[in-house]
Length: 83
Image (cartoon, rainbow, N blue to C red; front, side):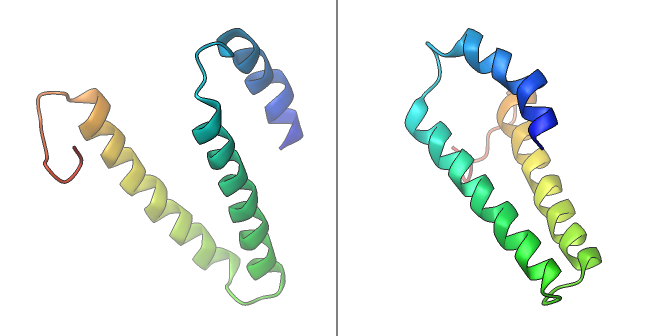
């Protein structure tokens, strides 16, 4: 994870630091850290199998991709539920 942060994210944060909304950004980072910790804990303690966790993450990413498509890619489609 650190390998991804340093070469990819750090330069982007440096260049866009004036435009970053820091409060929501820090909330997302904290949520991500907590989610990674909980996910690794429930798999390492064998509460949920690794395969099941991959399925949950896949569904979450699929739903997120649909949201981003509707909200940002195809701006001609409007849904009241997203606005």
